[in-house]
Length: 72
Image 1 (cartoon, rainbow, N blue to C red):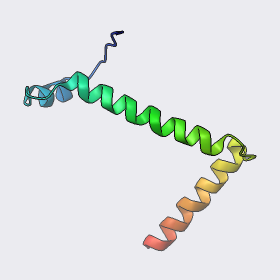
Image 2: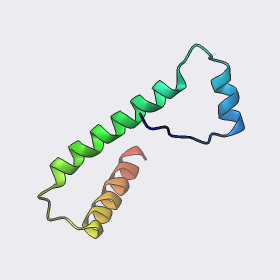
Image 3: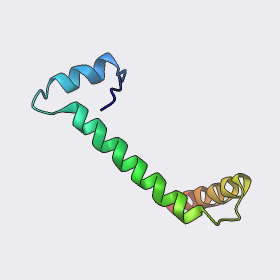
Image 4: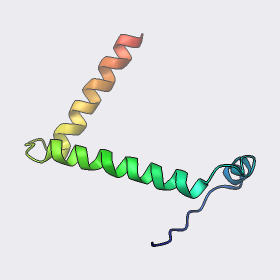
């Protein structure tokens, strides 16, 4: 197994130290695994997409504008 070193803020470390019963390395492994699983699903979904990065930014802006309009 390969090792990975993470840097966290002093505040975060203090909060983590309040829960010594938690295996923080395992929490990090699970989080990384979940993120990679999500990225793999997104890659499969978008594999044949014709959208450009510019298209996705424009769609995102329209969605945000619609949400803002709906919330007001």
